[in-house]
Image (spheres, helix red, strand yellow):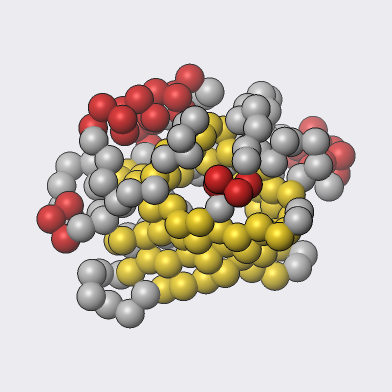
Length: 181
């Protein structure tokens, strides 16, 4: 798939083909899947159609060998019935578990490159090859401003426009606050 994408990028240009980038996105050096599995809150993202406007967003990851199951949960508003979708994927060989591809059904799949995970596996950053999407993740729904800004700085250091990120309300009190969706 990568050679075909490279050919399409060369023929049609990076702006026309999703996933084209002059610089590959850097990956975390190693991800321990046992420690990375479990529940993650989406603290912030670059909003896209499936997650835009959602509150209380989170997902659960489970690994079995080189297979991954990712169950996303988000709400239109607090107290509503959740929107849930499941993605299935497979680890990319040679990435030290820092990247896999997942999707709702074959043949549709999307890269999941982990660009950072803290040593305690409490926060993580997931990017996207063309840097149009990104996620700030945490094991807790709360994140102080200093930690959040430090994580955004990590994204900026690898070529992201940090101003594109919007925090995801995890409590009703966060709705309408500056910097939130």
